[in-house]
Length: 366
Ligand code: HEM
Ligand SMILES: *[C@@H]1O[C@H](CO)[C@@H](O)[C@H](O)[C@H]1NC(C)=O
Ligand SMILES: *[C@@H]1O[C@H](CO)[C@@H](O)[C@H](O)[C@H]1NC(C)=O
Ligand SMILES: *[C@@H]1O[C@H](CO)[C@@H](O)[C@H](O)[C@H]1NC(C)=O
Ligand SMILES: *[C@@H]1O[C@H](CO)[C@@H](O)[C@H](O)[C@H]1NC(C)=O
Ligand SMILES: *[C@@H]1O[C@H](CO)[C@@H](O)[C@H](O)[C@H]1NC(C)=O
Ligand SMILES: *[C@@H]1O[C@H](CO)[C@@H](O)[C@H](O)[C@H]1NC(C)=O
Ligand SMILES: *[C@@H]1O[C@H](CO)[C@@H](O)[C@H](O)[C@H]1NC(C)=O
Image (cartoon, rainbow, N blue to C red; front, side, top):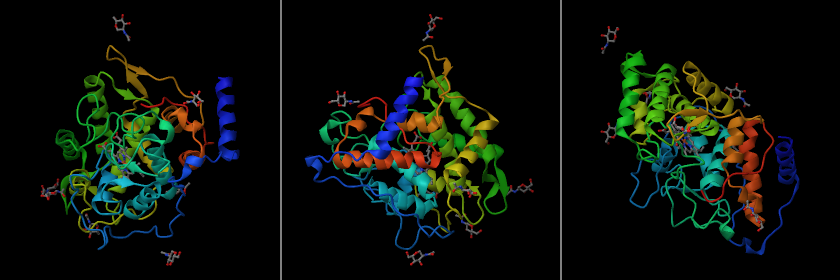
């Protein structure tokens, strides 16, 4: 344990104090710069006239994130779904009022987990010819998989996508969405405008998320629900409640939810969240969903029994699991612009957790 601690501390020092060596192979690399905090963070109608919905074409990348897919369909992100760190942070701020540091942490994790941090490009869908293998094949010989690739970021017990081991983990699944509608019809609030039991509430998510866990624990022989994925999955349920809600009322109708999840389009007459949604806010909403039916981090063993993980004695278990245990250790071997970008992004991921940045220590090429 002490050795692990010392290891983390020495990596922390190297991350925060060392200037990486400049390599000659740097021409073509893009230096990643965290965008400034926007001063435009109030309520407003989205989309504006400059961002109409345009259906994705055959070559356009779309993936497991309904938020990013919607932004790309409306041109807040490049329509082809090949995006930079800065474009993600700006687009989720503009479209959904996701707060700057939370957006930077998610975008930084996306870039390091499934993108090319040398070129500052990640696919919001699958592998793309526009995103080549990393310099020196530092994360193995294959091109980055994009956000659709299972593991590291995309994981089990999603709401509207199947587990990778069971079915389609990338595209919207009617059967799962029908289940969410069933829970809405049973536990939702009434609205004189959109109908009785049409308002998607925390209670709906509490019941639906627990049902999804129980289903996948039985159906998915290789279910993995470690603390990083567990936190992200409850965070994503909180995204639905808080970022898809109409900002004028803070409530989410079933019709609006369908527009985002099924059609991946902003509804007519929709207003974004009225103040920036940060990690503290989302974590507290996610915790409220979880605590109705607590589920602890773990994974199925070969016999299909759910085995709990040992607690991680670290600053933040979700941060450590995702950014240290899930990101390839080989990134520490980077030089030049890639090394510089790795440091920028690792720091951006750690920031909203209030934790010291720790260097990636996970498996390579997975
Ligand atoms: C800031 C950058 C973001 C990144 C890099 C990102 C990435 C992802 C990824 C990789 C997944 C798949 C996880 C899985 O279920 O296996 C996901 C799911 C999800 N994302 Fe995002 N996302 C971002 C922002 C947002 C925003 C702003 C929203 C909402 C406005 C959003 C809403 C969701 C929802 C609801 C899911 C879960 C879908 C489901 O379970 O069916 N995301 N995101
Ligand atoms: C934000 O700052 C820009 C200048 O950087 C200014 O033009 C704009 O009016 C400001 N917007 C708001 C909403 O304060
Ligand atoms: C909604 O519920 C109220 C009271 O439970 C009932 O009076 C009303 O008829 C219902 N409205 C619809 C459209 O079903
Ligand atoms: C989704 O799009 C279809 C086809 O354009 C439309 O008929 C339907 O009303 C839309 N649903 C929602 C919830 O926006
Ligand atoms: C959002 O709320 C405003 C004000 O109540 C309303 O006019 C608008 O129709 C709502 N939009 C949606 C998509 O529910
Ligand atoms: C996060 O958002 C909450 C709710 O809006 C706010 O009270 C809090 O000050 C914010 N925290 C940080 C660290 O920005
Ligand atoms: C699965 O069950 C068998 C029989 O009870 C046992 O011998 C084996 O150790 C179990 N495997 C795991 C991975 O727990
Ligand atoms: C880093 O590079 C050294 C020297 O080439 C190599 O031995 C080591 O395995 C690399 N580490 C990782 C995690 O790839």
